[in-house]
Length: 304
Image (tube, rainbow, N blue to C red; front, side, top):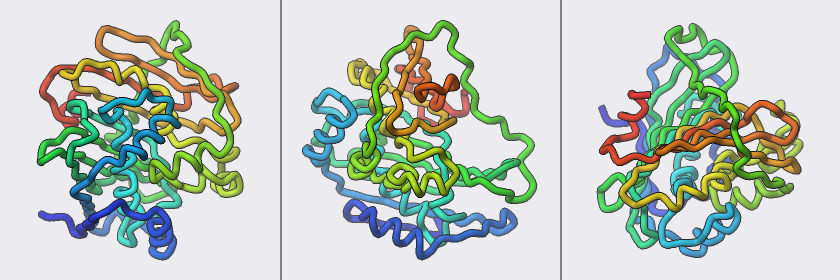
């Protein structure tokens, strides 16, 4: 069955309009007994803006090159699936949602000269004991070939009826004897700068007042920015390897705090955690894996 709603874009969706539409059409009620409305969005004939890529790389401490970094495609798909989250037929208001998991598979290196297209789909939901999860899948294609895939998990707090008893939350085992890979200070206003490149201008990343009203200590950094700053080593992976990234977002890394990255590397993967200064619990946990197998993102998720 085709999606109930199809959104088509010829250019990058304007962030201001995304949030305006999200405010005007925000839904505050979700009933799991109602039919789940599927929403898809496409953006075709995409040309990479070299100046945009250069500024993204500079802000994220990525060495400039002729290929897109693992997380740069998020700057293309994020504005599109923000339109899905902000659509009046989306399950709930986009201003209530939190990103809790990111799963990415890059099939091969992507040259900045390639002609790209994007497809995003709101694929389903799950009722949990203390909230609701929804899932958005994204694919970046080059002349019809899928070169990058992502499944994004979003979470709404609240009570939405009977919970799914079969649900097992994602879990990464603690890293024993982890060494410090990197550390840096996260300055104020980084979120505003990164929002201009990424499309993730959620006020919890740009406004202390909004973040506090939303129940947080203060405004905090976009996970995409923190990960892009932490995964520069993936740039040196041989071209024949696929890159699979699985990340669970557990807490917030606040501005004007130090970011500490700890991890341990094996032959084909790196297991890492990101910490926020004095917090001894990881705020972001993940694994980046390099492999040659001809698998899709769905294959890797099913095997996990």
